[in-house]
Image 1 (cartoon, one colour):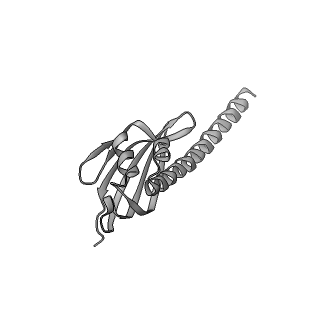
Image 2: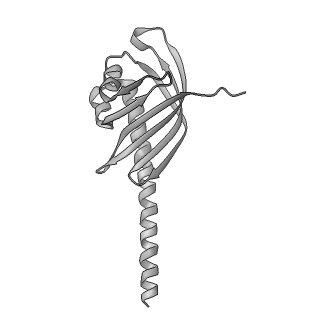
Image 3: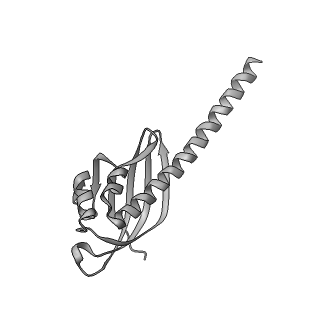
Length: 147
């Protein structure tokens, strides 16, 4: 009898952990979408609500922004995304951390310059703070051209 109870409790715990990971994956994907929209709008409060103060934001050219520089560039339109399309996104949950990878294609008009195109592969690291997912780190690399 006790073995059946232990087995049943173990099964319930396993199912609830699996369901939580699925819910977390959906929540992280939703946070990534909010980030995409905030990067296009440049709305300071939206950007700040999605990131941690410790944010490290790596560009494909090697420059690294902190949280203040990241927000300032987008809010001032120094970095101006007209469009951002994300494809091939994957989300992996490890405890209270999420690893997101995706392909990033954007049209930019940085500081009022003529529109340009950016094609990158992105790694995002999100941390769960209470019930919210906040961006802790981002690294971009130039996407490999298909042969």
